[in-house]
Length: 383
Ligand SMILES: NC(=O)c1ccc[n+]([C@@H]2O[C@H](COP(=O)([O-])OP(=O)(O)OC[C@H]3O[C@@H](n4cnc5c(N)ncnc54)[C@H](O)[C@@H]3O)[C@@H](O)[C@H]2O)c1
Ligand SMILES: [Fe+2]
Image (tube, rainbow, N blue to C red):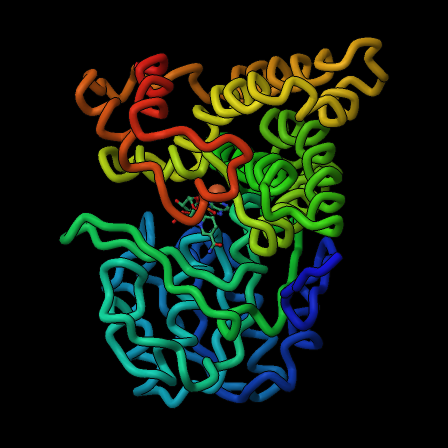
């Protein structure tokens, strides 16, 4: 057996950690760039952070410009702001979008602008050579796992791309998970982020690059999302459910960043080339279709997952897999994720084009490899 495993140097998991943030972040730097979702300025969270930094005599400048999916302009603007202020540490508080803007900025501030140079496929091949600034991540959506991964996904609304900057050095130095921060997430955000977490765990579990460590973590994350996603969606202030989903997002991030993903992420990325829907939407809609394709080739692939969901053993090989696929369909229905892509209005030609566009790092982990035409046929079932 042989594997590598990479993770943030330190994780603090505690409901209410925000109130004690001072004791966790002390020592990482003296001048902070805070990249925070504007929603947290309005609800007082930023005020708590500022007062804890003030108590420690630490300086800060805040970037509140992340609106919607991360754009290259956000990273360049935040990095310039940090350079002008002389920042020596970056703190992100928000969903995957804020975390990715902060993470990419931490690399760009020390290595030089613009961010586009470093992005896979669309950049100049520039690398993160100098160590990034120390990076601290506080997730607020329980979904992407960006708080533990070594990549940031940055797009351009102008040039219509969405690509990753990826480097081991980008991984957070400190990850503070306070599930209470997710309590204010509206049901739609909870659903989209939560099904993304479920898909990270599910695809890491079946990835051809899975290791015993990632497989076990992913399986525990699948069980948590199976138990708690609907509860968190139905009642945002159910703290036990928020804790369960924060943990599921954490295992999902740790497992997929060390083992790769699968076809739901490959297809989800292809959907995003043509339609500006949230990442978790495309991944969530396609997940049961992908599980069906994978189980057709290997009927027992999800047997263990089905048994976890059902809380019982099944007599016949394959019955657990069938149960798992049906469970995901019902979960989607219960949290407002549609059964297909009809609402996007895609025509036949676009469906087939999307089939050709779903290849890349994510797809390479899928246990079943089809050609573009065959994935296009799967898209045809969804339109
Ligand atoms: N770096 C990685 O490893 C990685 C992995 C998967 C996805 N991603 C990226 O993450 C991004 C999506 O992140 P996301 O799903 O977390 O959503 P998000 O960060 O885009 O946030 C979605 C919406 O929810 C709001 N919001 C977030 N937390 C809230 C809270 N607690 N209360 C109230 N409102 C809240 C935001 O203001 C925003 O309007 C995508 O760009 C995706 O590509 C990154
Ligand atoms: Fe994802």
